[in-house]
Length: 406
Ligand SMILES: Nc1ncnc2c1ncn2[C@@H]1O[C@H](COP(=O)(O)OP(=O)(O)OP(=O)(O)O)[C@@H](O)[C@H]1O
Ligand SMILES: [Mg+2]
Image 1 (spheres, rainbow, N blue to C red):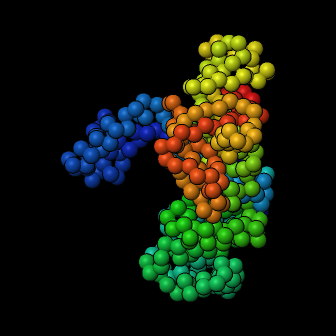
Image 2: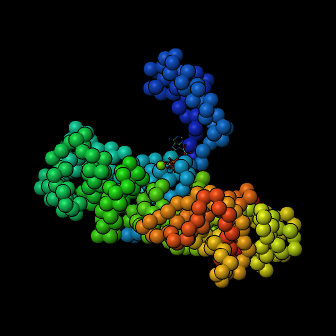
Image 3: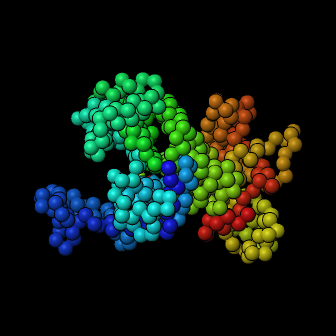
């Protein structure tokens, strides 16, 4: 078990590394198999890549972060923001980074992958196709020349942990297993080595919704039972909430914010985090200050909080944020909270029968706006709706930098 600590870790990629422009053919082995069609394809690819090629890609940009012993850190962020790179440098699969990485007190820069006791599970299961399940689990011990008895004992314990129905997967080759079964095997293969650290890279994204929930429960059980330090990359925010003790939101190679889900949701430090974190991201409405303490947003205006008035000259871009479940549909017969009102047209209704709620998406001028109401509130597409934004539930962000102002 170990705490994982990254200090100022950066990783930069040269995006044209595979094509030797001067020679007009790919570098290395691929270049030796050079043929005309391949060259054309590569040239076309280089063309597509050109904007990126102008500057090197900073896949990780000065990342400093600590994952506590036994903690599960969920990592989310848009495609290409550096999540897989983060896992690869921590695993030691990519050593071209600057900065330092520690497992406990040990700097692992020179520790080979096989000595790191990491269990890794990826989106594509990467099982050995010619071995049966048992062979896949045993392989790790064979490579190390561990005694058979030790391997068998670990496999027995792992099968027990993996639970009902797992043992029968051990006698089958991966090609004969379903996606979900293969993924269980991949998780077991990571577990059998008694890892100090678990790294998951979107392990469930190929599974259907039901299997995903089921496997998610299995992973949660494993993490609870062993309190193994883990990083869990996912595009599924519900999964991030369910599995992560904390969530790190990444953007362009940087950690934008890290914290418990509640903190990120109720206290986002940027418009990016507020607008990214689901399942229902915050409404963000860009407006401009009039210099006298009033923010004009599309068809309505709102008083800026006193602390922002002095620092907001005329024309300053300020973005107003409000959570979908804080906004309320205005009904004249009912008491409404104090706050500005926005008029719009209902464009789409998304029912959530499980929670007995619905999300209403309305068009208000140039904005699409969403709010959550009970299922019984009968709204229809095309209807006019008036929404109250409770003034004590408003967030303010600097439009230019995205930083939270209040
Ligand atoms: N081997 C490589 N050579 C060049 N560029 C790379 C390489 N690996 C990653 N990159 C670039 O680094 C950036 C981060 O990639 P990474 O795979 O870490 O993203 P990600 O957050 O895992 O994305 P996704 O959600 O799509 O899996 C991207 O811009 C990617 O194109
Ligand atoms: Mg990735």
